[in-house]
Image (cartoon, rainbow, N blue to C red; front, top):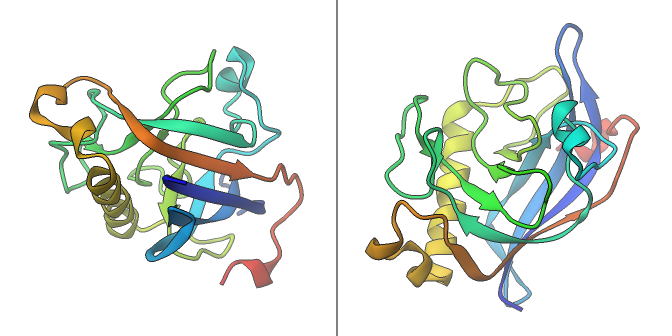
Length: 190
């Protein structure tokens, strides 16, 4: 029970001349009930999942599993006080328990790397074909909607005295399933 961002990895997408990405679907559940407005797709690095320092060095996705969430207050991404244009700091929140890897976040896909803006993080998006880039405005709006939902779930984590300090969000998790290494079927894209 609680707040969960459930991600199902669907497979890999690759476009000529671009990086390969893992493409998946996401759905938020609150007390095991899906929140219709909080669903879509996710782009992240390729696999296999790797939660070692090596995984960070070669830009791999994290292992599938269940991870706690935290607010984020850094120079590039913040859970409060972010820019709404493609300029840092942008909206984002932190995934905990990925050690020794650090700074695994959920944040928007942003210029100049709109095919994939990640070295291990999650970029929410609408449906994408293998040759399509993410749309910054759409991705940003999806991250802000997730942050707003987290804020409603645990207002104390976002209280004024917590601003500027990464704070665990109580009973909030990201649940990642799947370790696909083959291409995503075009049927799964829509």
